[in-house]
Image (cartoon, rainbow, N blue to C red):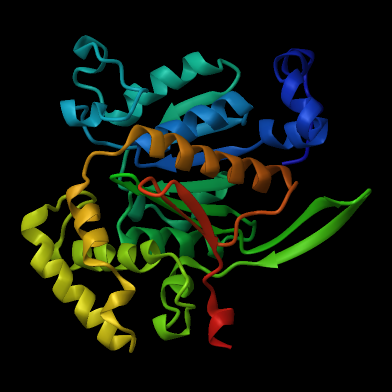
Length: 322
């Protein structure tokens, strides 16, 4: 991502943020290519933030045709039906994002992300999957890891006022300031598969309940062949049965996962805009840190619950099993 110097126009446009993180970091940002799949409220906030930050390009993937429900929390879709009639969510959001920063190349790509081969991901520096199935997250993460270059991988999910971010930067080297010095640091991240395969009995009880609840919902959607958000209160009995089986298999008490939290996740199909802004903002901040190589990255999960207003970072990796 290193390359040419910033142009005079870029230096003038990004002057304020260059003062915060420096010209070298901004130069890396302007050379970064970001792939984003699944565009609802939280991802719309993320896209807006990284486009304003001045990344090189953003490629959007979401082949859903814009319907009324797609407008929920997604401010990139204009309320005027004539502006999106017959267009996909990606195409509509692409048009809106171009207005935020004309210096960023924003485009839409059609297709099912899970069907693309490894070579497709080589042209990107960052891959973000929003609201993806467990199988898609596993598959794309493994494809990114097979590449000779390091591709930063993120997933994000938001249900009701609850949000989850997963981060895989593989073997990541970065710098941070310590007192008056700049020190070099290194972190090793587990894959998505490794992170969700850690036996629950090895995970501290203080860990966010959302980690366990999200895994239950993922298994439910996979078993039932449902897409993200295709669930309701009628599914609660099945979800609770899956919770029971997972807790038994992991030798932990069912109290690990409150039934009330699972009920919120399956009935909260409408995103809470303030939660979208917070989770989308955190995700953008993490991508900017990873691209610029400056500052401690989040390792490896972030959870937010609007009910208590708390955001927590959890390091859930195979090191817990050693």
